[in-house]
Each structure stands twice: as C-alpha cells, then as structure tokens.
Image (cartoon, rainbow, N blue to C red; front, top):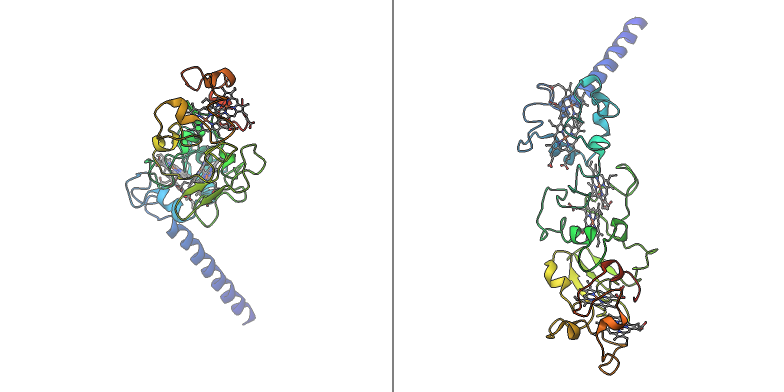
Length: 268
Ligand code: HEC
Ligand code: HEC
Ligand code: HEC
Ligand code: HEC
Ligand code: HEC
Ligand code: HEC
C-alpha cells in the first residue's frame, strides 16, 4: 500500500509538473511553434508585442534559442534578423534606430511631438548651435539591458540630470506631468542668461533654438540685439562686434563657428 501511495504522490507531482510546463508553452503559443504571425510586425501575435507585455524580458527566450540567441534547441537563430552586435540585446532593438535614442520610441512612434521621441536627436547628435549632449546628462545609462534601473516596472524612462556634469544646475527640474524642463543651464540658467526659462520636451525645435531664447531677447530685430545677454554687457561695453571678444564661438555675422565652444559650460 505504501508503495501505491508513493506512486500516487509521484503521479500527482508529475501531473503538476506537466501542468506548469504546458502553461509555459501555452504562453508562447503552440502552433508551429509560436503560432501564425509571430514574425509579422502587423500581427497581434507578433513576438515584439509579446515581449512588451512581458515587460521586455527576453532572457527566457534563450532557453530554447540558445544562450547567444544563435539557434539553440529551437534551431532558429534570432540573429539572422537582429544582426547587430549582441543580437536582440543590441541597444537599438527596442528603442532608437541609428543610435539608441528615439525615434523610434518604445511604442514605435517617430514624431517629435510624442513624449517618447521629443527632442532626442537634436540633443544626442548636436548641430549648428551646440555639441552633442550625451544620454548620461539626462538619464542613468545602463551597461547592459538587465542593468539595475534600466527596465523597471514604470515603463517610463526616468529623467535625472547628471550632478557631476559641468552643465548641471541644482535647481534644474524635469516635470513628468507636462514634459517640461525648467532652469537647465543650457537653456538659460547662467549669469546673464534667461533664467527660470521653461520649455517642453515636445516643443518645436525652431521655437526652442531661436537666437535670444536662452540669452537675450528673441523678439528683437538683429542677431546682435537678440543674443545680447541680460547682464555683464552694456551698449557702452559692446561697441564692437561680439566676435571681437568671443571669436572662438562666433564670427562677425554671429554665425556659431564652433558649436563645441557654445553651450559648453564656460564663456569662451
Ligand atoms: C520552449 C521553447 C521556446 C521558447 C521558450 C521560445 N521559443 Fe521561439 N521558437 C521555438 C521553436 C521550436 C521554434 C521553431 C519552430 C517553428 O518555427 O515553428 C521557434 C521559432 C521562433 C521564431 C521564428 C523564427 C523564424 O526564423 O521563423 C521566433 C521569431 C521566435 N521563436 C521568437 C521567440 C521569442 C521572442 C521568445 C521569447 C519571448 C521565444 N521564441 C521563446 C521554441 C521556443
Ligand atoms: C524573421 C525575423 C526575426 C526573427 C527571427 C526575430 N525577430 Fe525580433 N523582431 C523582428 C522585427 C521585424 C521586429 C520589429 C522591429 C521594429 O519594430 O522596428 C522585431 C522586434 C523585436 C524586439 C523589440 C520589441 C519591441 O516592441 O520593442 C525584440 C526585443 C525582439 N524582436 C527579440 C527577438 C528575439 C529574442 C528573437 C529570437 C528568440 C527574435 N526577436 C527573432 C524580426 C525578427
Ligand atoms: C536632453 C535630455 C535627454 C537626453 C540627452 C536623452 N534623453 Fe532620453 N528622454 C528624455 C526625456 C525628457 C524623455 C521623456 C521621458 C518621459 O516620458 O517622461 C526621454 C525618454 C527616453 C526613452 C523612453 C522612450 C519612450 O518610448 O517612452 C528612452 C528609451 C530614452 N529616452 C533613451 C535615451 C538614450 C539612449 C539617449 C542617448 C542616446 C537619450 N535618451 C538621451 C531626455 C533625454
Ligand atoms: C529588450 C528591450 C530593450 C533593449 C534591448 C534596450 N532597452 Fe533601453 N529601455 C527599454 C525600456 C522598456 C525602457 C523604458 C523603461 C523603464 O525605465 O522601465 C528603456 C529605457 C532606456 C533609457 C532611459 C533611461 C531609463 O532607464 O529609463 C536609456 C538611456 C536606455 N534605455 C539605454 C539603453 C542602452 C544603452 C541599451 C543597450 C545596452 C538598451 N537601452 C537596450 C528597453 C530596452
Ligand atoms: C568687450 C568684450 C566683449 C564683447 C564685445 C562681448 N562680450 Fe560677451 N562676454 C564678455 C566677457 C568678458 C564675458 C564673461 C563675463 C563673466 O564672466 O561674467 C562675456 C559673457 C557673455 C555671455 C555669458 C553671459 C554673461 O553675461 O556673462 C554671453 C551670452 C555673451 N557674452 C554674449 C555676447 C554677445 C551676444 C555679444 C555681442 C552682442 C557679446 N557677448 C559681446 C566679453 C564681451
Ligand atoms: C539653446 C540655448 C541657446 C541658444 C538658442 C543660443 N545660445 Fe548662446 N549661449 C548659450 C549658453 C548656455 C551660453 C553660456 C556659455 C557657454 O556655455 O558656452 C551661451 C553663450 C553665448 C556666447 C558667449 C560665448 C560662449 O562662451 O559661448 C555667445 C557669443 C553666444 N552665446 C551667441 C549666441 C548667438 C549668436 C545665438 C543665436 C544664433 C545664440 N547664442 C543662441 C545658449 C544658447
């Protein structure tokens, strides 16, 4: 009888084991193997959508697809399609394209008027006004996808300004509710700048980069008047062109000739 009971217990345990296994495979849907549409981005059953609902956890896929996503027991490699460094764990798989910053954002949006996209590329690429701004100025940057603080439960990126940066201001804030920034150094929080300035991450680039918006007065007529700082300069002291004294930054027509010396944390 004892033996019988043991058998029953074992059978029950096996049954339980089988149940939890079939839950796992149910999860990944079991018709050839994951079901129709698993590689079709417009299908409801697309693997990208499944991954989103699992809070971007993809380590489990390596159980069958191999530790380096190269095929494993499933004999189907992820890296044939995800052919950048580190395969699906590449920094542009879930957000970004040419670099890791959106667009595309996590929901595949590409318009700068959507908060996930915003003014990313203008910052991370830099341009005629200033040099590139590193991700680390605004975010904690993960070394790997499973680094602490990267993919957490909020599913909204955390914005935190880098307190070790020369561009850091203690009173600079990012307001999650309306995606606005206030008191950042770059946009006016310096002696002679337009302090207390607030702008939105989704504002049009032109409105935020017009001459006179960060220092001076954008409504004035000439570039010289527009860029004229709030303090430190008077009409009497600025009898010459701005370029007489700031020649590393601007030319006589007030073109920014060296973006890496403008908005760099010091007066050149
Ligand atoms: C339990 C094992 C198992 C797990 C876990 C698993 N897969 Fe698969 N997957 C397979 C098998 C087996 C195939 C190949 C059979 C087929 O094509 O029907 C496959 C095929 C695929 C394909 C199609 C590849 C192609 O070239 O056609 C994709 C995409 C895929 N899996 C993605 C994933 C993702 C993403 C995960 C994690 C969320 C995952 N799989 C987890 C077993 C698994
Ligand atoms: C047949 C090609 C193909 C295979 C094989 C494939 N993927 Fe994908 N995967 C795609 C496409 C296409 C996208 C969508 C890309 C986009 O939206 O720009 C995608 C998106 C993703 C995303 C982003 C999800 C999101 O919504 O941001 C992840 C993560 C991912 N795949 C992981 C995997 C993993 C893990 C495997 C292997 C287990 C795999 N993929 C196999 C084609 C493939
Ligand atoms: C000037 C500041 C700034 C810089 C630089 C910056 N970001 Fe962001 N990032 C933001 C803001 C603001 C948001 C929107 C957060 C929100 O939704 O509240 C954001 C959101 C994101 C998101 C979430 C997108 C979504 O779909 O919600 C990702 C991913 C991201 N950033 C990655 C990066 C990466 C990678 C870099 C560098 C290549 C970078 N960011 C550089 C400010 C910045
Ligand atoms: C599997 C999908 C996936 C991959 C691959 C991925 N990320 Fe992310 N990333 C996310 C998600 C989701 C968020 C928004 C999340 C949050 O905070 O929960 C995010 C947010 C970010 C942010 C904004 C700050 C934050 O953590 O909120 C940065 C910066 C970032 N990722 C950089 C990277 C870098 C660098 C890599 C490559 C090492 C990378 N990501 C690879 C999904 C991914
Ligand atoms: C006679 C030399 C001189 C001329 C001409 C001059 N600047 Fe300056 N500028 C300076 C000095 C010196 C500083 C640094 C002041 C300080 O450290 O407080 C400065 C600082 C600045 C700053 C930083 C804010 C501030 O007030 O400290 C801005 C912006 C600026 N100048 C713009 C301009 C523009 C625009 C013009 C032309 C309208 C101009 N400057 C003409 C000498 C000059
Ligand atoms: C996005 C904000 C922003 C805009 C727009 C802007 N500036 Fe500046 N500018 C700054 C900051 C910040 C400084 C403070 C010094 C530094 O960090 O380089 C500065 C400083 C300067 C200086 C002093 C030299 C120096 O060290 O940089 C000159 C000259 C100047 N700006 C000219 C201009 C002109 C001309 C325009 C319009 C074509 C303009 N700026 C538009 C942010 C801006």
